[in-house]
Length: 139
Length: 126
View (spheres, rainbow over the protein chains, first blue to last red):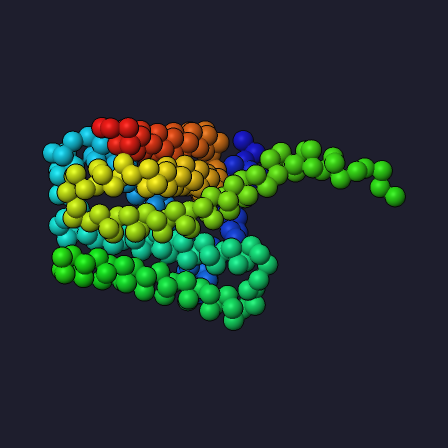
């Protein structure tokens, strides 16, 4: 009854604290978001590891069936993507270890470590898969 | 002069009553995962395109099986703690939060148990 006059019930839009879309993306922020996203990817990706281990423990026929999913290009993309997610999360983890120990908090070092860990994850992923491709090509 | 000893703070472990338990477990498993994760990359890379007999023999090797078991245990603890933080950050409805936290624990337990079962089966003669 009194709602119309007091304004109770019809809530005014409250100011919200600024969120992601407000800020200019900085490299440490992008790496932080990617650290969480790669963590989520690794979390669900464990299903693939479980599937592979169960297949190996089941039978040669079932193992061949599971392997056939990883052989085509889309299977390789998943494996390369998983390698990158793992290495990105690992390099980000190393960065966090340094921060946990109390070092590297000046802006220059933060930017350097953020770019460095991102670049390292890409370089190591490429190195691993070139090695795999070379070993298979050479064998 | 304060009449309280620091023991009170230590016993009650802060407002969440668990102190730095979550933080510390996440860091310990992270250190373990750093080495075990590199081991996993090597293991998978060395087994790409291998046939069943080769993979089976390799996974049944005691040292490889032990390292894999360590990775599974450390990894599932780490990922459960990580996902717990994500759920607590983004889910604010109490009922959904509790359900998701339970599902998170069940998922981590499933991954751990299924993998451990497979590794033990391979080790003890599948």
